[in-house]
Length: 84
Image 1 (tube, one colour):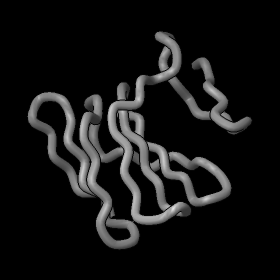
Image 2 (cartoon, helix red, strand yellow):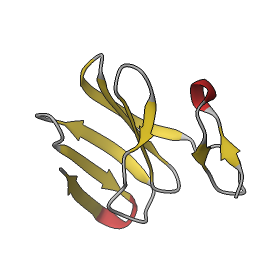
Image 3 (cartoon, helix red, strand yellow):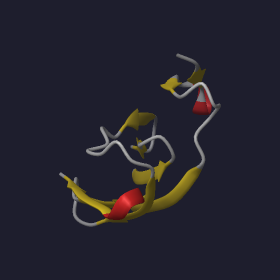
C-alpha cells in the first residue's frame, strides 16, 4: 500500500493518492484532529501526527472535539460515531 509522509511521518493511504482532508478541529495546539476520505483520522499532539483509529469505514466529513479524547465524527451514509 502506498504511503503519504506528512511532516516526514508515514501514513498508509489508498492507491488513489493522499486523502483529501474534509474536516479539522481541536482543543489546543497539542490536540488537533483532521478527518477525511478513506476513513482518514489523524491527531496532532504538538510534536507528531498519529493514526486516530477511525471507528468507521466511511469517508469522514465533519469533526467535533470536546474534552481530552472525546471526538465526534460524521461521515458518508449518515454515519455518526464517537471516539473516546
